[in-house]
Image (tube, rainbow over the protein chains, first blue to last red):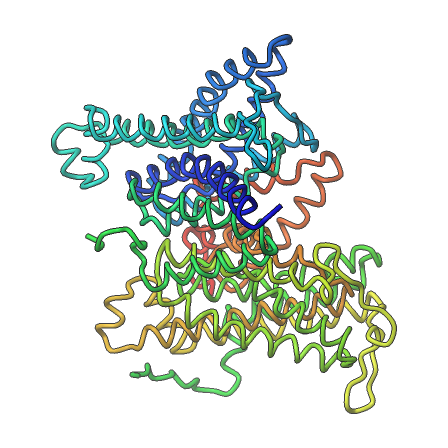
Length: 293
Length: 332
């Protein structure tokens, strides 16, 4: 293949990565923005979403589309319920102290991972894609489902943006993010907003996982990479800034796709992690974030 | 920098009446006597626990006393591990020289890592240390020609015999020798840590943990003190890594992974952050807890996870921290 088509393929692959990454990172960013806590178990909610998707899809024999739709509807709900339970029983008890929350979510990470290993096993299992058409470019054929993933992610992110900026729910969430005490003084149930935001954040990760699972199989260790990449995206985009998160996801996803096609993936990851650490050292508010309040 | 005045003891043997010192010496003597009663297998696993406890002691200086939560100490442990292991395997250094090479590597990495990471604070510090350690882990995978990546390599042959300059020689394959070398390292680090936290520097570190702005306002150079704590903590972690490589003869990338950054945090939290003996107690308990449960179930990660949650929610001060609060306020 020539350089041009090769680059085009890399861009396509990068866009798929970016789309799913944006959804996952949006969840992490929302939780950080509103609750000011870092959820280290975010990758495990992603993994849980994928594993549950396999389970729900395997319940339905016959048409793969029906199984996939069932997974898409139910898996995020279950993950959201699990996250809600974690928030109520653990995070609320440590009073959202940033350091205690990190340690507690590391604990959750181990527990969720071990339960997945025990009940789901160490194998990677695929979920059949709901659609199976291929798009034939002049140089190569490309899976139509990957384009569906891009479109679905874009639609979901747009919906999340609408909810945040155009609804009462979003207003309440933004008020809590802006100033917790004042929000409480104005009668906003901050406690319930926190619980809801944590659940929604986990559900976004689960939706992203359900979308990716026909491309990349479900495995109990699959949460590591999305967690690391989401961290990178959220930091570059500015902790808690949603447009910044989406922009950063596109940059990171595309460059990850392109660099991995042309260079060693390990080297690419080393450079990306170092770069992000340095961004955080020089500009703690992120490249796109405003000045800290 | 202003310095607190050291209270000079009235008599030269005043430390004999010091409960804190006596307790630590007692624990070390008990560990020394333990080898007489234990089987070879138990001696080896206790030697492993002591080497790892040194790692936790180093971690505790930064986390327990200076109040800086690092999620990247595996990089410093691995710096010692690879510094010793690679120089022994590829440069043909003997065991004592390789041990020093490991410590030197840890010192250099800790100084460079600390200079950069300490420009941030709070959550950003945790993420920066996590990121650097991840980059370090990936680097050890990238240079798989030398490190053999995840698979790791085994030290064998001449390196299993440590020859000191005086002509004294130790057989590093012998469990009793390994046990006593590990105990000596632990003793040096534990007593060093006790001396450090009772020194003016230790007081300044605690002051930084409690209120950094006020400490700065009182005229202390908080940045320099934090860097000092980071370098001491990192060098001890590297000493533990180097000892691990030489005593147990295995060097692998697993020791650079995130898991090995989380473990010292867990041990210190369990034993009690900001207590000198806490790291040893935490490592000991956690090691045998995992050891016993893995006899019954393979779900050791569940044990680790549940332990973390229980500690954070109900015992944020750990075992010795709770003990100090309720029963023994003199505990150092």
